[in-house]
Image (cartoon, rainbow, N blue to C red; front, side, top):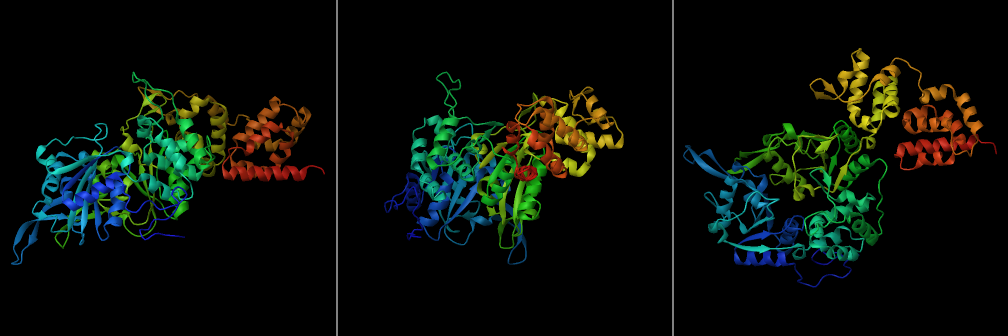
Length: 612
């Protein structure tokens, strides 16, 4: 493969190397500030490539110079500088100011203070000294090797906590306001998808109105293309903002929502790269988790309580990397659970990470209850991890993927106590998926764990209650009902308690009758009377549009778990020829891989049993 001296490689979008010396506006600004020795302040919307430009351009254009990235939103007052007792040469104890170790890398460095407006008041005061004089406490950053200082952020009040209005600070900086056209995100995206010609994608993006380009930021467009590469629905790359999928709709003159253009725009992008854009895919949660580990993604799974998000995540991660994930629950996680600054023997301020983040073994981080953080500082630390895959500037060794799990703001008409987010936070995830209870195969786990009692309870759940009732009876609730039955306790106490003596509005009479042995039609009953059922179906005629008997058998087969169908596969193969073709066709469409294999085997048995 042909490679230029600068490391540039031809790709489908840019088969010819860009003009020698061609730089984006931000890259030219970086060079100018380094030449002048001035502090540079850069403002621009989220997701346009501000940070990535610094991280990629400076090492390439200034060999030997390191970028020290300090996410200001993640800092606590003692992270940059702290006073600690040390021994002098005469053996006396004296206070000494210890500076963050990363600010002494041992070679020339550029200090990049990211999200600079989101830091707290104390940090803002510390950053004032850095920006004005390139000093911190008693330390001169120039003497430590600093050759440039930059502050970046988005000025939008919806995404920042402060505005920089101190003239003493502003008079020491050169400020540049940029848009997506001022960074090299197109070249980076073309290199990421080197086999696709993205020329038409860039043309589609450039032709969108400003508001839609803001929603479909370059970062979000990258996620959309990553989804296309995996064969996922492209809409999964759009962020979930406060629990709802961002819609590509431009507001009207009066502020009311305009026409939703999401399907149209994503369809055009899919066509431009020759990718499918399916409405749904089989076994979505497992496929998302496996893709996250394979591609080193951060993904967000949002689903109702009790649907099995956490358990399936742990199971798939263990299958993929051979060990359990590193698990944190945000409501009980403090900043000190992740990292704390400590004095180091060399006179710097080191960072002590929690032991679960150390070591070279492969890791997947699971952030459970992601939108229920214990405090803002913990969530701020987490934002660095989901954005930069580092903590206090230290990359996490062996980190293969991150999975954030959360509940929606509303479920079953009730408000859940979750935090809100903004577009900048929401767009950090390559895939944001709204989990449905049927997406997670918890039924099989219940059967494997509780046997025939679980089969009976699932028959009730599938056939005796309506769709709304099934939303109230999560798999977690169903497990409680099974356990209560096994110990002889009243079933009502297993339902979700709503307060003041009221439980979830689910009638349990049918479940009691089934558990007490009331005759019911399930796959075991079907197998026990296979001859009779085969005769009844045959009497209706093979090409019949369907009768009550064929509908009953179809419902039983469609609702059965793989293990149940496998156990009675001979009976299934005997009955299949007598079902209407339109019903048989549904068994192979949109099914998980294990169920598709089962039905392929069943149809093979059916064909083998037919007379030649």
